[in-house]
Length: 295
Image (cartoon, rainbow, N blue to C red):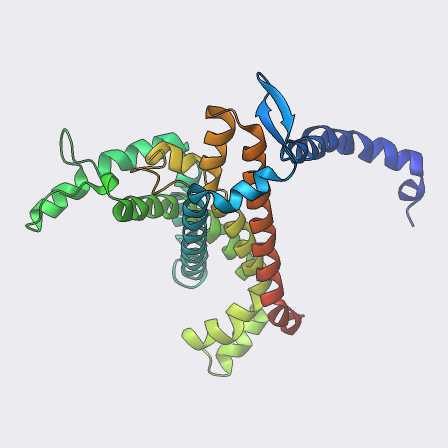
């Protein structure tokens, strides 16, 4: 063993500052927030101990059911879309766009670094209906249709939100999965080609199984990120029309900081944490047989 690693004082000096910062800014706020769950009120009005009343309210509140349904619907659809588009892009980078791959990767990745508010304003203009039609409604006119209030209807607002977030995020998952495919030894792919595997057979029997570890990471990253969607919803629809595009995160923010109910907001945060944890465990357990085959 390296003598530096075996020395407790050295380990304390190396790890201690990071551990202290992590404890101060992550662990303590989590424990503090959990304590709020059993109270009612806020920092101005004071806190009153209410026991498990906030948990009981979670089951009674119809807005929680609506927000939870939207969060799950958005999370599942976005995760499938992000990982599928990212995997198709990564295949295109490796097998179709070999020479121009770097240029295309840069173009597709560019929306990832754009501010969310700027992207939301862009999409509001693209799908605008008043005072002037946006590009999408102008195209609808060319096809002989009438202008559509894309952000005034719950279904179309959801589709616009999905389109915007898929456009923003697919470049990231494309690069992530591209790195996973590059890790596959070239000899294995060449051997498969010599044996007659090509096209879809090569992807299905060689690329897909050997990309499973990075695909699993992409799924876990995606589902945890999409279940906690916040900024794109606030910037594009602000949860509307009505509350039809309000996820749990936005409802939690409104409850805690607009209505001043820290306890109920913390209960919503606790519910979201449990859902993210359950989704992660489900994905890992469901893919465990495939992971064993890869090993």
